Structures are given as structure tokens and as C-alpha cells.
Image 1 (tube, one colour):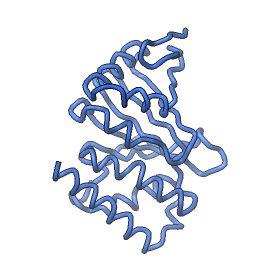
Image 2 (tube, one colour; image 1 turned 30 degrees about the horizontal axis):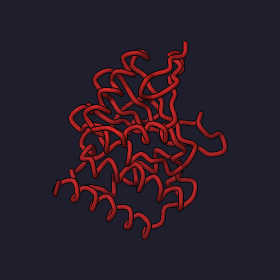
Image 3 (tube, rainbow, N blue to C red; image 1 turned 90 degrees about the vertical axis):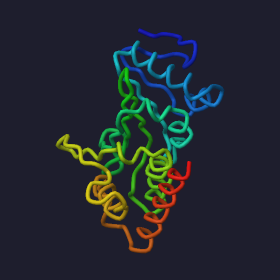
Image 4 (tube, helix red, strand yellow; image 1 turned 60 degrees about the horizontal axis):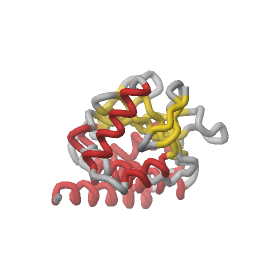
Amino acid sequence: MNNNDFFFGLINKNNPEISLQKVVLQSKKVSKKFFTKQLNRCLNWTGGRLVLKDETSSPPFRDFIKKVSSDAIGLVEISARDDINTNVEATLSCDIYLSKGVVTVEPHWCAYKSMRADEIISTLLVPLHEKGLHDRTFIVSSDGKGERLLCFHHSDFLDEVMRLFILSRYYHSMDETKITEYVSMIKMATEQNHLC
């Protein structure tokens, strides 16, 4: 059953998928509060599920997450999938839990080479830290068990990066210089959040 939603456009209730890019463009027209209400309204109509698709490895996730009210986000889960792009070991997806359901962001986040690993850090982890969501973010393994993104020490960003790349199934190619750079980026994003 299709519905021409006044805010998001055409949505299939049985397979509720929308372009992340399209949603971001709409979000820029309205306040955080209004945008978050529209997401929850849409989730209510679709039975609690909404998938935001992006066919790139560098999605506008930062723009999206900035427009969702922080206090409306219960938790965030990052998991590996093998059904998005069969040419790679796994891609990462991000589930955002709101009061009326779960918004799943499905881009092509994959660490199969250095440039793609950079994009996972800059377009997934950094925005989560900038928004202050790292304390509510869990890494979900293939057996469905979730573990806090920062589980050992509140500022153990090295462990966070390593566990994320293990989840992505491409941890073997990470060199020490890049890891140090990633840790620095995440630390800066976290500090930026504390200043806001």
C-alpha cells in the first residue's frame, strides 16, 4: 500500500524505504522539533520501521542526525550487513530508536580500503560523537548481542575504532597512522559536543 505523504512523499507501508538524501533536503526546511515529529508520525503509520537508503559510502548522515532532537533518540545500534552489497564482506547500517519505532540508515559504509574506512569514521562515528550519542550507541554483533560503543573507559576511542572495524570485517588493513588519525577525529568531535 502506497501513501503520498505530505512531508516525505511516496512511501510503501509494507516496504517503507525513502532516499536519505530526499529526507535530508526536507529536514533543512523545518525545525528539529517538527522534523522529529514527522519521523515519529511516519513510523507510527508504517508500523515502527523506516529505512533511509543511500547508494554511497559517504552519506549525508551528519545532516540527518543533526536535525533529529537528541532527547528523542533512545539509543543507536550499529550492525554489519551482508545483504546491501554482495561485492564486499559487509556494510554497516545504523538503527536510530525513536518513540514510535526504528529508523534504519542503510548506506554503503564499508572499510574494504582506506578511503572507505575514512568515510565510516567521518560520516558515522564523528557525527554520533558530535551529537553526544556515543553514550547511547551500541555495536551489535552477528549473534544479535549489543555492546556499548565505549565499553571499557568513557574515552577509550582506540578500542571503539578497533571494534567498529572488526564489525565491518576489514580490520586487517588498518595501519597505526590511520588509527591514530581516527582517534584524534573522534576525540575532537566529542570535545566539540561538550562545548555546546
